[in-house]
Length: 351
Ligand code: SAM
Image 1 (cartoon, rainbow, N blue to C red):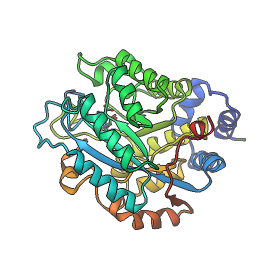
Image 2 (cartoon, rainbow, N blue to C red):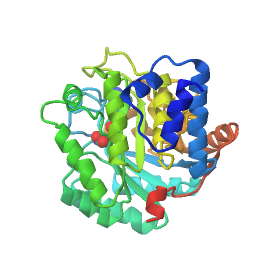
Image 3 (cartoon, helix red, strand yellow):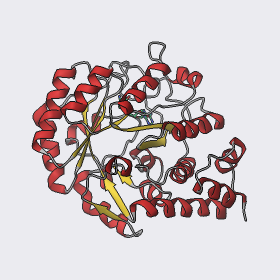
C-alpha cells in the first residue's frame, strides 16, 4: 500500500490526517499516487452526488468596493471603470439564467456601500418572488449580523465568504490594516448561525502563503464544517501591489480539491473560474479531481470585462452561461451530467 493510499483510507474513515501526511500529499508525490488521489476523490463525490454537476449562474452585479485587499483587481485603489447593475438588470440576468436551466443565482460583488440593507433586501426579495424555485446565493463580503439576518429573511439561502487564509498573520499580509481576521471569522460564524448554507475558501499560492498555511486552511475547513468551499489559484492583477508576484499553481489547486473532497464527500465544491483561467481544461480537471459545481457567468456582456479580479479572467466559452451546450458536452465527454437543480447541500436537505 502506498503512503497516499494509507492517507486516503484515513480520510475515508473520517480521521483528519497528521500535518506530516498532509505535507506529503501537498508535495512531490509520484504521478501514480496523484492519480489515485484524484480517483478516490471522484469516488467520494460519486458516493453522494452520483455523476451530477450542479451549475450556478454568477451575476457580478457591482465592481465598486470599499475594501483595498492587496490581491484584488477591483480593490478601491484600482483605477478601473466602475459599474453597478440596476435591480431590473439583475432580474433580467436571472430570467435569462432561468430559461437556460439555472436554479441557483449567485449575486457577487465588491463591498459596495450603495447596496445598503434596504436596497439589497429589496433585490433579494424581488428575486425570491419571481423565482420561488431557485436558490439565492450571496457573495457580498463582510456585513453586520443584522444585515445578514435581514437578507436571509428576504430569501437568501446561501452565502459565500472565503476566509482567504486561516492564519491571522498571513491574513494581515494580504489585507490592509483596517480589515481584520477576527471580523472575517465573526462573519462566517454568524452566517452559519443564521442558517445560511455557508461557503468559505481561499486562494492557492497567494503571496506569503506557506505549506503550513494550507494545512491550517484544511484544518479550518474540517472544524468549521462549511456547506461549500471555493478555492482557486491566485492570479496577479495589473495595478495591484501583488502584480509582480508569482501566480498560484493549478496542479496544487487540483490536489487540494481532492483532499478537501476526501475530507468531506458531501461538500459543494466548485471548479472555479480562476482554475479555468490558470490551466487549459482547468474546470474539467477540477471535476476529475472531485469538484461538483460550476459557476458560469450570467452577467451582462459589458459588466463581464469590468469585473476583472485578475488578469485574463475567463468569461467566454464554457465560462459564459449562454454556452451551456458546450459546457454540457465537455462534462458528458468525461462521464458527468449537468443538471437543472437547486443543488442544495445534502445536510440542509435532510435537516
Ligand atoms: N467582496 C466579496 C468578498 O470579499 O467575499 C466577494 C467578491 S471577492 C472579489 C471574491 C473572491 O475573489 C475573493 O474572496 C478572492 O478569494 C477572489 N480573488 C480576488 N482577487 C483574486 C486574484 N487576484 N486571484 C484569484 N482570486 C482572487
